Image (cartoon, rainbow, N blue to C red; front, top):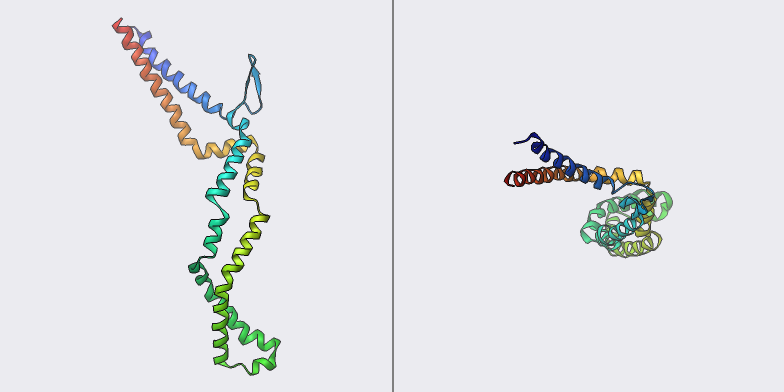
Length: 200
């Protein structure tokens, strides 16, 4: 068997690796549109950065971090219950110390039983009031804070270098796998070519 036949799988493996490496590079390069033989070429991500930003903004605002989900969490009775000990301690401090400092005459007529009764009334009222306050707050926040627009502006404003570094840091293993897979497939195709040429 000729040594040139043995080179075929190696060359095919290199071609497979190289074409996949080029394809990955072309996701990000060239940064700016370039005309080659009358064809305009630009990297996919630089070319589609605005569309990518819009899709990501929509995804974040509707699926990943919606105001409805945040509101649901904040107004959840279990989460409010976790806040009540802090609120109770603050009310207790107010009735025992601040009220005495601000209104000493009134505080003279408030004993331990009255403090406990007032705390119970205040806490019960606040448990009802907190969800209403938080719902209104989230409604106002949603009007003032357009999450989708913020994400779109941030991502669209990324430099192509930064966008590339983010995506490569996330998908470096996958890109490496694609390159290796190209080499393996090229090698297999090369072996098939050798096998076919030996049969001929």
